[in-house]
Length: 247
Ligand SMILES: Nc1ncnc2c1ncn2[C@@H]1O[C@H](COP(=O)(O)OP(=O)(O)OP(=O)(O)O)[C@@H](O)[C@H]1O
Ligand SMILES: [Mg+2]
Image (cartoon, rainbow, N blue to C red; front, side, top):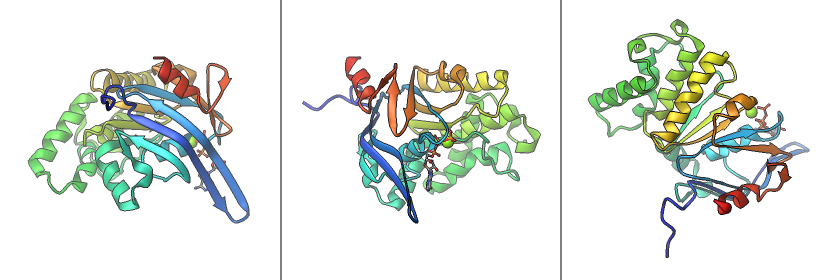
């Protein structure tokens, strides 16, 4: 019998390896990594600088491709997709939130949020408008649609970036230190929003953070060290799998 979608992990990595080669230098940030993330789970990823957190996030987001191993997201092995297929997959399935927001300065909040939808030629202007307004409302910024990034606070800019990440209704949101540049209050608002997106809207969230307080907002925290995942003091690339199968 096939496992039901509820029981199948949304993200499933097996033997995931990333090797960077430049000249004579070889760097292996990820080595034979196994990881299961439940659909709708909010996972925090911690680890020292250079431990491979962004590398892992970029693989999960389809921005980069693994050197070896399996990477299934929503039942699809994205490690086998071509660059073009990956771009298409990303547009529909994954929203990315960066530490420094990465909004386009000359565009309004509305136009920034609309950007990912312009990749989808099947959407009419009216359909795009409905989606953009719904996303801005969800992040509590309906009244700032016409503001440019420079006219917003850092916390508001990050909320616009989250609206942009969710506007195409992806199942997955990844964040690379999304609260790293914010004060505690603005950071807490972002964490509340991410919790709502996973708890109420069923989004699967993988968030890299250096801040234990931010990690505490997630349901589970994994630590990356020397290419391996560490959980609860056990060093094992199978740690996540063990936890997943114990649930
Ligand atoms: N495109 C690349 N080419 C070569 N080496 C790379 C590349 N990207 C990352 N690396 C190397 O891979 C390792 C992991 O980098 P990564 O950016 O994933 O770390 P990180 O855990 O996100 O660190 P930080 O907390 O500082 O953001 C580093 O040693 C880095 O130098
Ligand atoms: Mg990083």
